[in-house]
Structures are given as structure tokens and as C-alpha cells.
Length: 317
Image 1 (cartoon, rainbow, N blue to C red):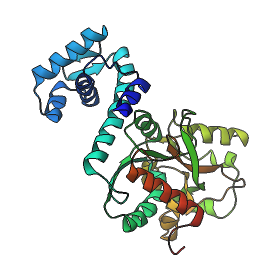
Image 2 (tube, rainbow, N blue to C red; image 1 turned 90 degrees about the vertical axis):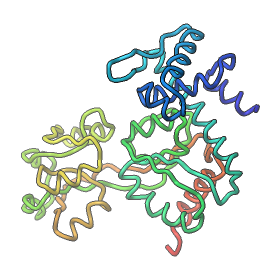
Image 3 (spheres, rainbow, N blue to C red; image 1 turned 30 degrees about the horizontal axis):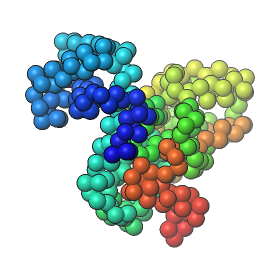
């Protein structure tokens, strides 16, 4: 019980208010709908509405704005949701772990990972881990880096495995797991560019594909271009990194992708590598954890496995 009080203190949850109110608020905010929250909770719409009104009354704050298609959080509601989601995440995880009475070889892990991190690191690691620990369930949340960091900060994830560059709170432990470089590639109509090393400036005449403005990757390559006397202007902006290869292979433009992801398509002559007269920036896949360990016994087992794999390499490597 002391753990519950510490969590609630940490996330500024008022213990004088019934925790069930915060739980109902959390699900209503998560789904943006009173009806969906009621269904998940096994309750009914009038009861959920009543509890939210009581919570608003006790806090003296309006938490939701009612709209024709659902509800949305007010500024105060958004601030409360950050803390309520984190507290609920910890409590749900603890309840699950206690309910399972999990030994080291069982339980559930929630991992947030970018597309690049999945393909360059996690898929092979999770495959080998499952062989050693078949009774540990893994839930993978595959989103963009900002969405993963938001979910991690709210306590919904055990770990975040994301691709640099990014910014996050100093309170989290950030460990380097894998270094890589991007290469410049294009579809088959750009085959004439593979015969020699080209300066970036010369390639500005061609259409470019990349992650859009507002992403850390865009900022990275904007600075990279500037350092070589060029200005990055994208003709096609992708919202997520998993869209880059399909856009490039269909000749929408040239762009940077991790070398290991591009090589299978280069080998099949679906893509061509465009040599540059300069080296692309070194990038990394980082593991974010709260204190250098997992939040549950299962998560801690996976954390130690990843760290051992980093030091010693995969099995039979």
C-alpha cells in the first residue's frame, strides 16, 4: 500500500478523492468518449458522466469540453491527464504483476518502438528473447518518436526504444544500443546517379523525399545540408519513417534511409544507392528506462537481456 501512496504523491493525485474517479477520468480522456469509457469500464454513460462531474466539482476545475462527436480535454484536463495516466499505468502494471504472481519467466512487457528501431534492433532481439522466455508476453507499440515519448512519459510503457535525434527529460536513463548511418537512395529512374560521388548541391535539382518539418530527423538533415552549403527542400514529406522506402522505390524522389533497411532492395535492383562526396551523420537507437531497469519483473528480465545482448552479441554471433 505504501507504493500506491508514493505513486499518487509523485503524480500529484489527491488521495482525498476516490481513486475510481481518476480511473474513470483516465479512460474518458484516453478514448475521448463517455460511451467508449463506459463500455471499457463495464459501466453506463450516466454513471461515467456523474463521476466526471463530481471530480470536476471536487477539483474546482472544468476537465472536459463536450462536443457533438465526443469530448476533449481542457487545459486543466490535459495537465491532470498526464499525471493520471502515469499513476494509472503504474497501478495497472502492479495489479497485473501481482495478479499473475509472475516468476521471472512470465509476465507482460510494454515496449514503444519506432519502425527503424524495430527493424534494426528489436525484432531479432525479441525473437531470441521469446525462445529463452516463452511465457513472457510482449506488447509492441509502434508509433512515431514523439508519440512513443509521450506514452513513455505518461507511464503506459516499460521502455521506449527510439531513434536519435530526440529530446526527453533528464530524469530518464537513456542508453545507446545501436549506431547506424543512413544512405542516399533512389528508384530505378535515378540509376544514372550511381556512377560517381555527387556533392549535395548537385543533387538539389532532383526531387527529395523525407520526414517532414517538425521532426527531429528533418532538423538533423536541414543542418547537414546547411553544413555543406545546401538548403533542404522536400518535394514529398512523409509522416513516419516506414513510408520513406515505398515513396522512394516508386520514384517520388531520392532520400535518406538506414543502410541495413535499404540493402535488400538494392540487392534486388529495386533501389539504387547514390554515392555522396561526404559522410552522413551518425545516428543511434536509444533505450529509455526510468531507473535503468524495468517496472516489473518481466520488464526487468527483458532489460537485462537487452543489455547482455549489447555487450556479448546475439546467441551464436
